[in-house]
Length: 129
Figure 1 (cartoon, rainbow, N blue to C red):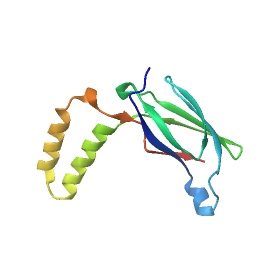
Figure 2 (figure 1 turned 135 degrees about the horizontal axis):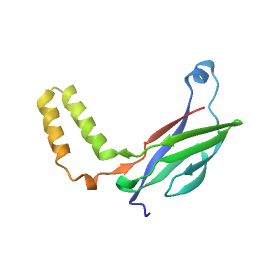
Figure 3 (figure 1 turned 120 degrees about the horizontal axis):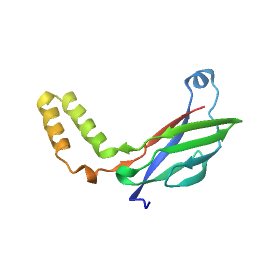
Figure 4 (figure 1 turned 45 degrees about the vertical axis):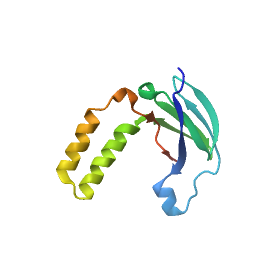
């Protein structure tokens, strides 16, 4: 499987309870990214450049070891083209175009060639610690 493009992503450590108590997130974490298309070993924090395989982009499993704990998360691909249309429709509602603007955006979205949609992974992945 050959990647179509590479897009940026970032992993952030999040925990509401620990943040409120002043506990700091891990400074370094040894991590592995696994999918049917590739495997990579990284150390976080680091900005990632992840491959995209279009509509066939597989789920990724991120496994990190930090502060003696193993953290795991499945990362699902995102259809960025569909996301952009949804955001545009929401913007039309906010600025007063109302249902007519939403309907026009929906019509454009449904008539596009979905095989050309841009797929990738979330720009920010929150990993609970």
